[in-house]
Image 1 (cartoon, rainbow, N blue to C red):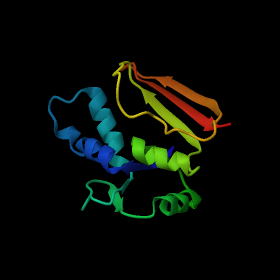
Image 2 (image 1 turned 45 degrees about the horizontal axis):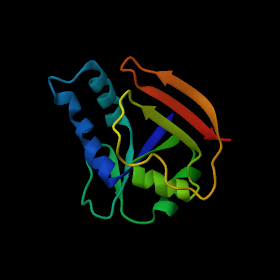
Image 3 (image 1 turned 45 degrees about the vertical axis):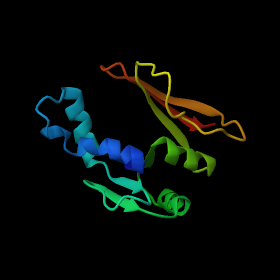
Length: 144
């Protein structure tokens, strides 16, 4: 379903681990499965400060709105957005059609909010849910 993953710099720097996770002898079955999926997925990284990206990724420095609008016009699979800053910007620009969230069974008590403050409410329709053996729950919503 996902044709490419759009990432901001900070999330990219966290997720780049998965490009070589399969080389970790202590990686669990779940980690290896995720690494295989991640490595094959094309990634577009939005950053003004990164010099290069690794693996199956390309770097975009400017024109986030224009780049994403252009990508959405192309035929093919869905675009996934990762990173609170990038997601917030795209939500505010009205460029997000679906919300796909992975909820882990842990409460941190702090961190970056999922969504930016919004001028208007966005009504959503539940499309799909899935619970993984790791107890992570996936929920997918579409704009109503």
